[in-house]
View: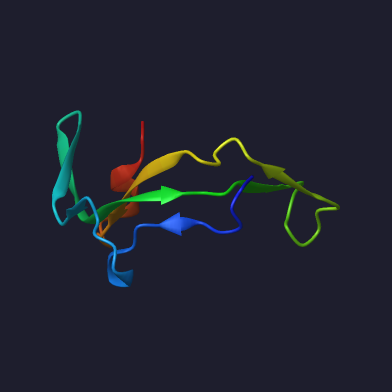
Length: 90
């Protein structure tokens, strides 16, 4: 049976994340860029709602339970402001 809520290991609610701070460095050709991390934590989603088109115009909602009970590791980044085209995949 699926739970009715998403479980997040959020550090301000008493939980302790796996990691706090840090960076990940990516290289693309001769370019190198750094993504600053805020934290890494666990999440458990109850399911995923799927709509045909927009949520406001869809005639129905499907519930995808394929992710239920599967913990996922989430990395939360800090807002790094670079030119948007720098991160394009070519």
